[in-house]
Length: 145
Image 1 (cartoon, rainbow, N blue to C red):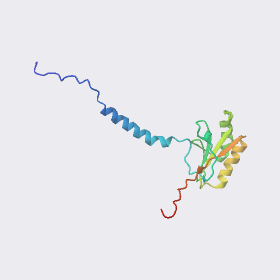
Image 2: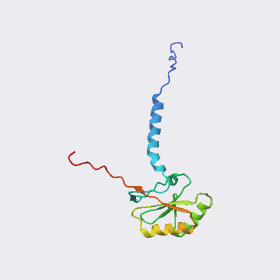
Image 3: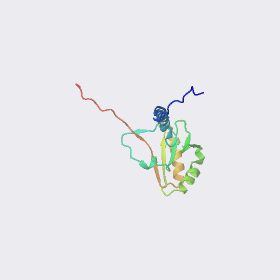
Image 4: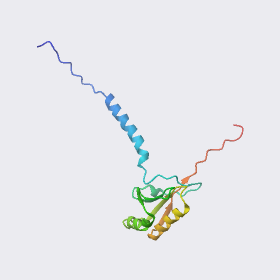
């Protein structure tokens, strides 16, 4: 029975499996992070001189989005045009900062955006922010280079 001997104990830490797990987690977070943006994704209107609105990125900001096909979203939940005023009133009632941010798709109908703005104003909102994106222009190379 003494013919089989136990292998010597290895006291070194093997970090290869830990590195594999960490790389998998890194890839998962890299893929998921862009999906964590607040609200619904729309192609916003591009302007040359947008006004900075850093409060729109806050977690508790009230954000309305209008998609190109006329659907309206309060945060991530879709609402009907007739519900804008009541839903915004409910959202604003619990806040000190009564600012609502509207981001409309560049191809949304003007009438849809006006309908949303009118509904927000009827809710008694103090400030209304229209979100846009800055036009990124490529640097012009001088002739002869």
